[in-house]
Image 1 (cartoon, rainbow, N blue to C red):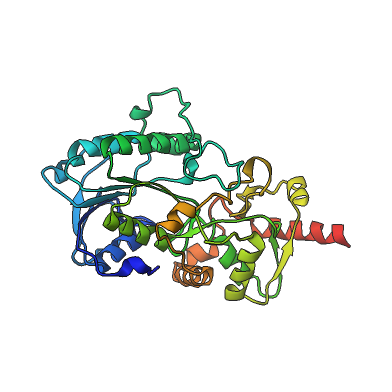
Image 2: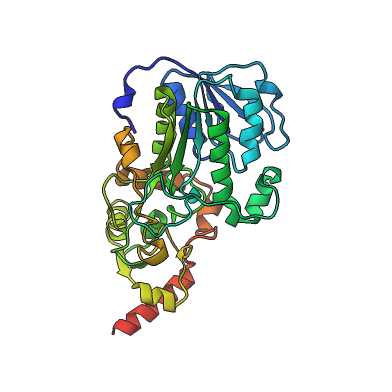
Length: 358
């Protein structure tokens, strides 16, 4: 989203590690639009758009092949792709001393607890409790045991701070949403409501809090952080004001299908019927108990540093436009991932809910 940071800036020699995934696409396009000389370093295996003026270098972080970066100097580096701390360590053997600023894309999953509403960047982070040496682990090991994800990101942050002292920023996004998100986490709601006609859509308690950030806001601000050489940690969670699930879903309905009927279920009903927060009803996390702070984490530091959020209505409209241009087979398979209720299950739950209220 355009901000006051959109004033003319000096062109940077900008290295992006990754650059072809969910965040990378809008990040690269934005950096080029700002006049930066962009170099991407990745395996070159993803079938992605080639952007004019961008330099593409091939290597393999998992095998430690950084030959294409040897002898190169950059004003700034943005590291999108790291899942394991050895990737930060190994890249620094080539880049430390050869980049003026380093931005590490981390995650709010580094935090040890989600129980405290308003917790900020100083909150305790998760400690590694795995049995193996964490510097021997690969991304495949993480995907096989996602319980390690947060603590390995913690170690990756520590490695970034060690390797780039005094010129390192740690960006900790929460739920990243918007066009290009294949997970169905947020996408479930615009698509499901758009498909609903005048029928009912099962939704979680309206009162529970919610936070998210559009992928383009993450991408653009990461470039601005590099331009301004900001340092320290920043929680990237929006919107700027506290928002509830009900408010989010009402906005989605207004854009996607005003005729849809949103049928609210209580926490007790959902728990009694085995409906999982976050998974069956995506985005939703109960705002009580151990998860009271999940969608209430402080974003004050990032806001003070200039982070802005585009309107949710724009995110919804753009997500739907992207979705409608996907292959019909993908649309027909919705919901295709692990997120969202299958139609038959949702109809069953709606029937039980109505029967209990009659």
